Amino acid sequence: MDDKNKPTSIKSWKEDDRPREKLIIKGKDSLSDAELVAILIGSGNRQESAVDLSKRILANVNNNLSELGKLSVNDLMQFKGIGEAKAITIITALELGRRRRLEEALIKPKISSSKAVFDIMQPIIGELLHEEFWLLYLNNSNKIIYKNKLSSGGITGTLVDVRMLFKKALELSSVAIILSHNHPSGNLKPSKADIDLTKKIQEAGKTLDIKVLDHLIITEKDYFSFADGNLM
Image 1 (cartoon, helix red, strand yellow):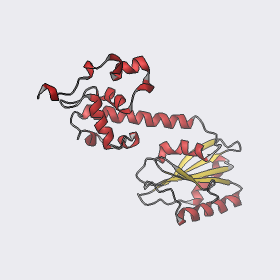
Image 2 (cartoon, one colour):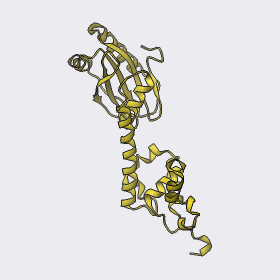
Image 3 (cartoon, helix red, strand yellow):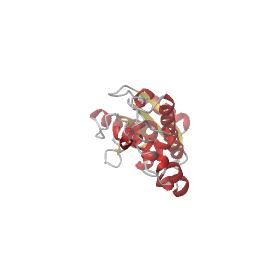
Image 4 (cartoon, helix red, strand yellow):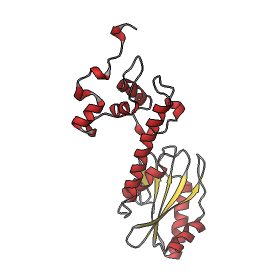
């Protein structure tokens, strides 16, 4: 290869522009997503530096870290310079980030808004490729006493057993519940089936003196609240 066409080595950059050194000198917030990925993979290929390779990988997923986290080892190995070990490193780092978000959500169990529900449930169901229906069981202080996956379905839907839903609520002496399910399609508009099911659960809750506070449809980045939308 002509020297003129060789990629510029990261080692030849100014010290405070190199990803590792930049992190030490300026802090982690100063690094771009590509620079963080470059630290993970360590090196690029003969045509690209680690940063350039990282930029190309991110561009392939529209610079969306959530989408990057969905790639498999084989997907990542399609990029020249990414072997099995580097692919596993990227996947592991993103999975740790996802679990961290989940843990942060779980240490804030009191529900004060629909956004609080979204923050808790999005890491659990927001990125799934199939639908799941979950319940949050609350005490009289609106604190979560239990989370429960009631059902899991395919890409198009899931079945909900209302009797099992309230059986658990009674066992826990829960005074209120919040419903949530995901739409893998990304569509936030509630279907007629979603609306009918919510009304059915609400009516059953009135008989048992258990409040149904909200029902959230959750996608990867957003949510729809039945309560906020005046559908409760």
